[in-house]
Length: 220
Ligand SMILES: Nc1nc2c(ncn2[C@@H]2O[C@H](COP(=O)(O)OP(=O)(O)O)[C@@H](O)[C@H]2O)c(=O)[nH]1
Ligand SMILES: [Mg+2]
Image (cartoon, rainbow, N blue to C red; front, side):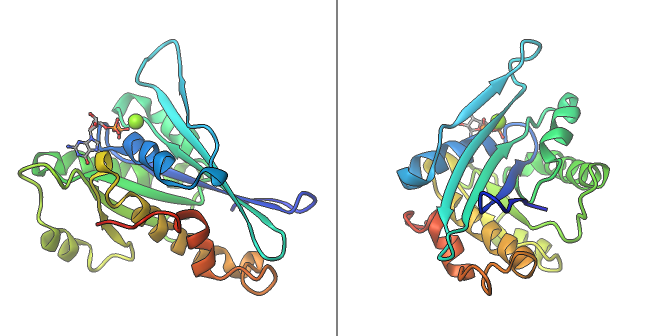
């Protein structure tokens, strides 16, 4: 559930970029930080521990105001993909309101993607998230590289699942805003009724998504 501070009139959604090591999670956040309009965004922060240089997450706070005055915030995180950092992944995934699963499109990464997806489903259950209802978008990144699975093959594979699939080249900023937009659509659907986003706050799904990614030319 999102954090709702009734007194301050603030609703905050936690969105997590999850996936195998090196799939492009941090690149997604760095590009969003570049692309999104300045008044929405805060600092892109990277936390590292002394024990391991690769152990970090990124936090990108974004905010907008609904017609009712409600302040809607997003906090975007990435998790470390390395197998040994499962504790950090669980901590970051805890209380997530939505996930972009960043897969690496290269054929040789297929088993790493599958393992990371299993890890996501398992950790979601471990931190008490209802995986069936969790807003989730599957992004296939690194479309610029050779020997990638073709779009048609990937779409066929995911056709029977409830999850939208997007394609990205995060290092060029392509597909990055679109992936966030698809996730925001799912997040809105999941919480519209609970928080009266449309009925009480005058915030349509389109306005919600556009407030965050409207400044970006969506490329695929
Ligand atoms: N060719 C290519 N490289 C990418 C792409 N996205 C990320 N990378 C590279 O893959 C490596 C890992 O990216 P990073 O964002 O740190 O992955 P993370 O471990 O998931 O956070 C870096 O060298 C990136 O420059 C992409 O779309 N295309
Ligand atoms: Mg990273």
